[in-house]
Length: 398
Image 1 (cartoon, rainbow, N blue to C red):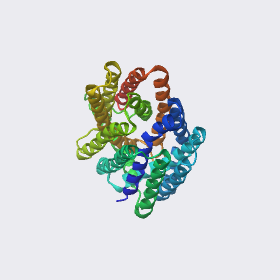
Image 2: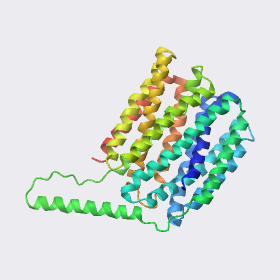
Image 3: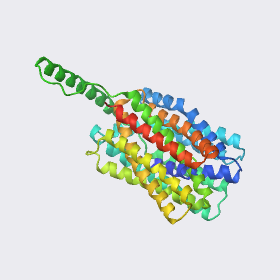
Image 4: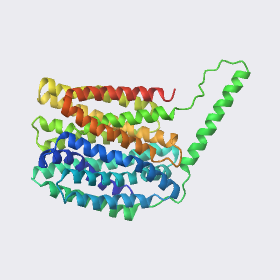
């Protein structure tokens, strides 16, 4: 039940995610690079705060207060967002929003991991992500309806403010701190004991003159983090300018919202399937396959440029968005689970910091590449990036 506030929060940001580039390049007369700089700067500023919020919530062992701080501050800042149309001021306010947006991420991950046993972590994360992704989808569909009925940019921002306020009030009533906080610590102890057991087993086999087939090496956390960072970077490179790509094809703002909703629908399906198959899925295999799928699917968007916009190329784009969404759902659940195992207590913000750093770089690079070199080059670069991420996840556990 405590997820309900997050549903409205994601609804607000689902609406904002597509509205922002359309608003900046349309109503305010800005460029795609302006959009990239705004989102990139906000994400860069938020990176150190991801570490800070994660450290503080683990140190204080209090999580509810950081979630409420996040949602209340975002509500106030979004209202300020509606009071100006100066791009430089909007960039400063959006950066402040990003700082408080990451305040709820680490506490939320810890609450989920402490609310479920280790064997139920994947199911818990899947349930949360599926529900909140429904909120994101609802935000996109709301955007489609608002643009269809001719709502102004300021009116849409005020609706986003209202959704954020509802998220705060719902969390104030429903979110509680766990009475006992020990599950992640138990997992860390289990992993250490398992490593020691494997070491003794290998030593025993060697003393008995038996052939040793087992590898004792631990997972390389640095390579895992590099793969996560790269995946986040190329994802942002692709999806930040993508609404403008569809807009340039002559589609209406409402239709662009509708197209982007297919990616969110795919992600919801991915979360549901990941939850149902939680016990059968190997997270290491899932993240590799997700990167390969996204690498191939990124190239499908080039068909719209090469063959022109038609029903066939539209169908290819929709298929690519849907399948990429499914792949993302599986990827996020698997990496969340792996990160809770690999990242020690006290560094809960590292996962979100890496996502934020990759997203910050990708927002600018995606917008800059699309505007200066064209969308086909962007899609090729993104495809290569996903493949490099695949290589990182393939090697980190060897």
